[in-house]
Image (cartoon, rainbow, N blue to C red; front, side, top):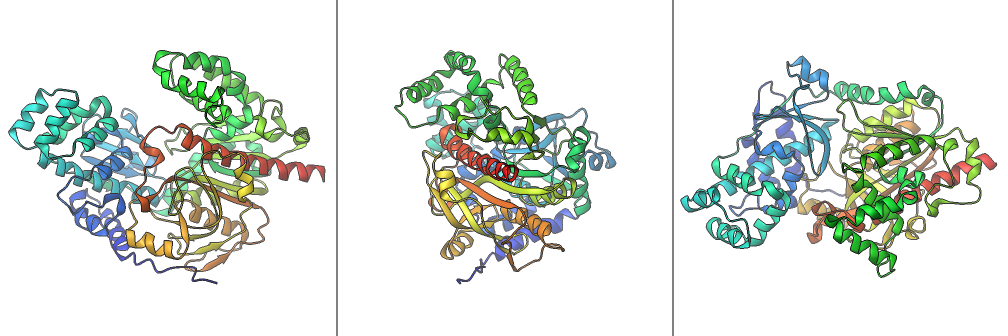
Length: 567
């Protein structure tokens, strides 16, 4: 057997992590400026120009997408696990404005002046927020220095919002024209006001952690789950299939609602602002592109329900889902994760997606099993969630994890099926029998390739990587980089063994008493500096693998449950 755990040479990462955790133990505000040097020395590929006077537009965009837009005005950031933690410190968030980041679901609130409050579910949120704030401040201040000239200042007060004006700004600041266009696309209509804010002052962010004990995180999980048990007290006795995916694909496939309301969705497509989507739909209908019409309708339904005219259809959808045994629990305690519970016995089997239909599905009417689907969490909170839910339900019959990952050998849209995960949190290497293989996913994926028997690594954070770090893993055959699989497997270990998960060991998870499956789809390719799915609209390059993997999970659950009932 090859060497299972490579030596990553990640001393720079460990130094960075130790530095900000030691600073956050202080009871006063910590200046992000004190972290800039150690952040830059880490050499993260997401912030490769941190030490350079050149503007790193990619890092500025990446960090700004993971922070609420109000970070433009916020200079103070407060982190806490829940409302009680904030209230104990005299911070009442009832009158604060709820805000969110485009690329993170973290619950956040803005006081309307200069303070941002972020809810954190585990230490992974800290590992995500602190590097994002640091990268954002470094690049903000670079851009500020580039716009200090009197001519640039005058132009910003009376700017020309076209390509010619962007060319003038590029010439005056020394920023590449194409880079300014990228910023314009990300900041949209707020571009010029953001540029004015950057030009007016340097950024000096402070951050404070209100509480950080493991008990605080566990209590936040318990309060989050409590509302599910209150609404469905029988859940503590029923067998379950646990799924970590998203809040769209599983329920869309089960309810088939979008397929039954195709005409309303096509009418929405014919509105002038949807011309490009309508053209895409016409190409699909004409079979000029190999896309799934079902996936397209699910995608349009999601967009339509966010509009004012889609509210009525949203109410009809909610009623239809209740009819077929789908219970939604939107996050109301600011924890940030939605929950869905599906009663298999109440499903309408003539409603489900055509790719799931089979002659013996009606036997599931006798099933007492539930599907618990949660919106995939961030990093270590996945361990806290699964380890707690496993103690609050009846028999666990399956654990299925679906999520995004970075691929070191594939392209965006590929699906990776690992059978080995090295976890940077516990330093364990987990060996397991993944219930999925390439054939389970391949029949429903159009654009990507399915790569099974892969080796994955669960990292502490997206910024917390170095080129040498990734290269060492790649040389040892690790091609799948993400943040949740390792913590989930630590929870699985405790569901299987009579003790807490170990550390720095090779852990054998074969012959589990329940089903286990992990599916990752590539959202970026860091070694080739490829674009990520989050850089633009999801379109089909994201819908294709997410629905292909969701179909594989539901087929697996239906197979196991029908076989059990027929036996």
